[in-house]
Image 1 (cartoon, rainbow, N blue to C red):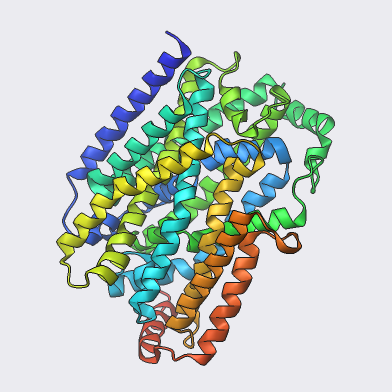
Image 2: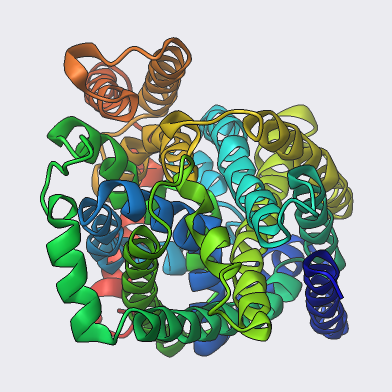
Length: 500
């Protein structure tokens, strides 16, 4: 059988297993928005940790981060570790999201903002922000799958075919049983991701003479990649901050991640989710960076660094079975992120735009149907973006920068989230003004390619929206009664020590 045939066979087995798990999850689905989009807030600790990991770590890691390590060296490790450092934010926000979600029945993070600021406009604007900026992030995952399958098959599987397969799977698994389906398939996919990554890294290190020889050779042959800025010209302070800032706030700015804060079944499950994710994330990050280093020694001179992983998997020393398992692990990583984004965006559309603004009198059943049917529409839009990006080349269209650029826009909701939980004086007008002004600036700078004083769009956007948020809050009226009720409830529960 040809390489293309083996690749399709592996994909077929993965699809069959994934559908079996999704259909099994469907038998446990109840009715209503909370059950479909949040699994009725009853997800156990282990599954919560695995779905949180699979949702967060995507094609960006073993394709994008490996490629960035191939090109830019150790700076890529520091850049990705800012995400794990930023998880200290979860110490403050995870229990607050969880408690507020249970007390007030929030479905989306935007739902929380709309209620806290007593303004449907806040929820709608934050929802539009997510819709605009999560599309290119989803496209980055689809593009990663297309490049991987094309590289693995020696071009036998076109990039567009890989993108189409991932899109169809994401649509199906999002629709079958909502979050319950995604959480169960995510758990399966997270295990495949980690096991395949460890096995292949072990093989790469062995091919290079063992761990000691591997590190020694890399230090000797590529010393320039162990410095910051690197010898390749990457990782000046402007680039590092521009890429790392969205990663630092990722856990609260990206709604497909912060929505996971609503789902643990108990305080114990909430702690297990965060602890399990930290362990998973630390080791998965190291593996991705070491993959990039190994590729730099084994296949130097690649014109497109995002092809480092596909090229490694196609090398003769990698057993075909292991290469296929690793390929499926990366596909699984990307699909798990895409279907989570689709589910979140559909809930955002249904709750914060359709029922929040367009049809406030809609029944919950109609709201749920609107959310379910918008999933394929959003998937097709992401597919078009991925297809367009697949025709480009160079650093501006590498998976890692594309993902970070998309997340830069989502930073504009950060001041509103901080204000909702920690500042009684924060106002709805300030939230709307800060999100709109910051997002507009980020879009203008990204479209024009401008970087004033060398700083990236996300940096300027966050500075502007923070200043606007504070300034407008001081000159407009805060929803004092709701703020006191909301913050008083959280303070009471957190001070008891039983919910942290």
